[in-house]
Image (cartoon, rainbow, N blue to C red; front, side, top):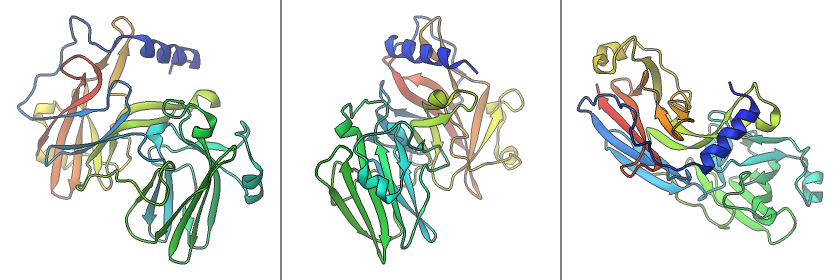
Length: 323
């Protein structure tokens, strides 16, 4: 693991380096006649891409489209931030929530990780008071009046209620929704309604920016935004070494003997490496992945490129085959 100083240097170098491949690109794996799909997040990673393998379909949305997701989960609602926006939240008491007018460094700021929400789930009769930093990287919201909101979410009777006010003062936005069984995507810039984010079909993969923890780093540099691939709801995956079982040799029988996980970032971000000599990313071809969509349906896949046909970064090209 590089030190935090090296990590900052990497970020600065990536930000100032051209997006194109070197003149002599690295050798990609030989294609096996499988299907190809391209998930283009854009050179600044401003797009979230949902992928369905069976249909070969992609659904793309701007990552600033929403701020919060309320997801029904049994007898509670999970509260998720927008990890693609590098969002953080600090839960506070009611009195402090009312009195705060500026973001304080000492607040208990937390971000969502791939499988862990920053905020506790909401149960009937409960209220959650928190301060939301919508965009810690100040990419979309550069002014404090845009970045920070005081948010109250409550579940009273058969209704979910949300109020949000700029931290420094301003108009209060409100939302009211009946309790239901579908996720609620909310943009704090669009009061009174939800926003459409999910595709109409099931997403097997989500190619997006998210936060990965580097626990050996100081707190200030521990929560780091990366670009990678997350599993969709209910999808399982296994990582396979190409040295132990070549991609071409993986079949249905071998897939059934693998150990699968529902960990959303099992594919993750580190299938690519940054090459300092060329200023570009290279792909780790020594591993690939097998997805289990249900008891009888398996796909093998490998990521073969991080650049589009023009050589611009941010386009994840996936080769995959049903087994």
